[in-house]
Amino acid sequence: MEDEFGKEYAAVLLRDLVLTEVEDLTGLEALAKGIDPRVIWLAICRAQDVPEERWLGLNKKPKNKHAE
Image (cartoon, helix red, strand yellow):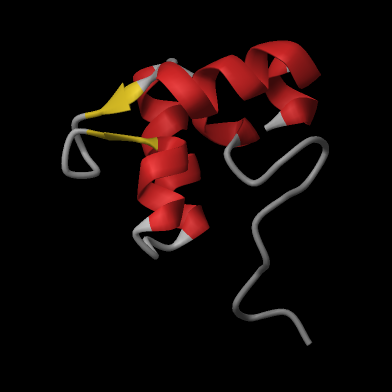
């Protein structure tokens, strides 16, 4: 989250952003409830209109299923 939003704003989003995709919980509440962090991250990405090509993180590309 810090790569995408910066340290301070990432903390604010995790604490304050209510995620409708995750039972109307904040990220912190969802983590405390045991919801997979990846599910939370993707919900934050969609809520904040993060471009899909950045959902895996800074400068990361999806793994090619057919690559060896």
